[in-house]
Structures are given as structure tokens and as C-alpha cells.
Image (cartoon, rainbow, N blue to C red; front, side):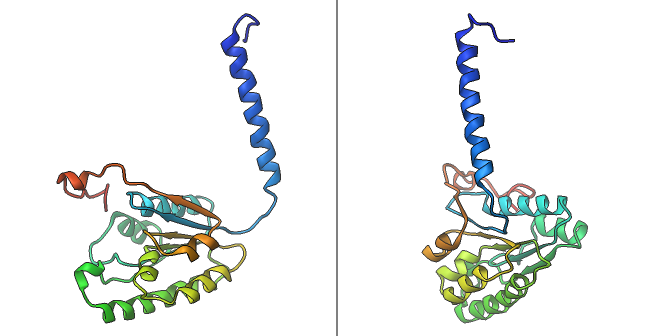
Length: 204
């Protein structure tokens, strides 16, 4: 119980009352119900991890989710293993070529990117998908593997109830402009830069 002679407690109570009023006003003002486009970008670790966290959140509500991974695919990841073994309701596709700096085959990578984007277009046109994750899509735009205007058009014209999460560094101004939420993960410090090997279950 707050006592009149406790100035710190009274100050805290007043501050929390003000904060609650601001939060309540923001909630009341958010009256639009529709899917959102989220861009997770930046040079720090955690973009894909955050996206898969949203997949788990969607599954908790019985929602249907789709995941398409560009770049990755040669080395198994923990998220791929888990989804394939425990979440058959998640539609999962990978480009499967691995990292572009490993393939060193621009024409082959472009062909693979276009074939993988076809999977994306199918999901983005299907209103039964509540959430679609396009992991590392930004690289496909940055390397000019995909037509940026077409990608932006398909994402923008998806079913109104569908949410999309795009991850990866860069990707151009267009993605930022059509996104409802943009979060940038900043690289402060990374174990790999100190010679520590990537760890199973943590990094992949």
C-alpha cells in the first residue's frame, strides 16, 4: 500500500498511470484488422530466429503457416528438422542451393531463385495461409535474381488477412516502403568473429 509520505512510490504510481493511459489510447486507436508485412533486416544475428518464433506463435493459435527459405538448404538446420518432424501443417520449401558465395554460379542461382519464388507466389495468393515467411528474400532482390517490382506487387496484393515476414540484409527501399513493421537487428558482437565455431541448436 502506498503511503502519502513515500514520494518515490507516489511518483512511480503517477508515472505508471500516465503510461497506462498512453497504452490504452494507442490500443483504442488501432482499429484496423488486417494482415501485416514485417521486414526483419540488419547485419546482426537473429532475423531468421525471430521469424520462426512468429511461426511458432501462429501455430499456437492453430493458424496455417508457410516458410520459404532462399540461400539456405545445403546444411540441415534445427528449424527445418523440427518443422519437418513435428509440424506437418507447415508448408516448407528451400531453394536448396546453399550460399551464393559457395555456388559461384549466377545463372544457376537465378534459375533456382525463380523456381523458389514460384512457391512463394502460390502461398501469397492462397488465403488459407495466415502467415508466410520469406527467409533471406532480400538477397534475391539485392543480387537482381528476381524482379523487384513483381515481388513487391505480389506481396502487396496478397489476401488482406495474410501476414508476411521477410528477412535478410538490405533488399532495397521498396520492401521498407511496403512494410508495416521494420525491425533492424544490429551487430554489436558475434562469437564467430572471435573464432568460435557456429553451434548446432544455437546458430543453425
